[in-house]
Image (tube, rainbow, N blue to C red; front, side, top):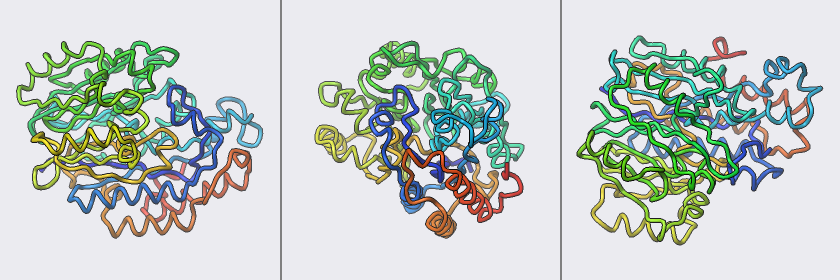
Length: 415
């Protein structure tokens, strides 16, 4: 009865390019550009629709109330009075990247046999540090069944950025697995966002029976791999990774093979795909999924197809006899321009779909209804000079209310 469900973050109506994320090269490159919230959200809807057509169960997480007036009040200001930088932090739509929503340990891995979810604190970046309250409210509704245990954030100063720095390897989704907690130490001018203290605390809270704690390489962080999911992704028995992703690669591989002899490690050599190419194309920020027929597919951003070196290596990979058999490019250009690919947009939860609040599960008919709300209410474009416009703020709030109404969640998530 256990299946992997991808819960995608619906891209919110305040989606803009403020360049708030230090170390995220795409975010910095596109800072000050004109964003297209409507197109962004519809691209996300189409990605979910494609997954459903592949036979994969699909869930959603919802945009947060923006601008975050409560957060600004705690800083002694309001949306009308805040300076431009502070207001941009309050307007961020970064909760769309659901891979940072929480860390998830499925029931087969935990001592009490429950699926545990710990909301990420995201304390390293101001624009993300005030996400956890809105995310926690949604997790407590979506996963209210006794089959789940939902935890609050690890306290500061220990940075925790959720599933983007967590991988799970197992023979099959419904069987016990090895959970990999990837943490950072340093990386040139960029901060390490995941602290080992936070990773260990989450593993203890969840009662994880088989856990490995692995350092991300300084070289990867310095190159712009701000999360592990920019340089590695895992699914069932397969680890798909860049050669330079981890600090002590050989020690990690040996520990992993000792715990899961069936593991298949597909390593992309730096001589074929540089870290720069991997990060530009978001090759590893792909959804590595098991299809209903048992085969595995990579759901990649179209940017991977557009990079000749990356695409040549991928085509040579699937021409062989390895475990990954299909390449499925998807268009998420608006998210990519702000530094998030297909995998950033989803939180993976292995559970019984019947135990999830049905308002957070979608099929094609529900996606049609959500797409209609987005087409009617999401702003078409947001430029930097519009961020202080109170009329835009009200339009953003009204758009979110329309989405909550369509999902019958207005009462619980009105905030």
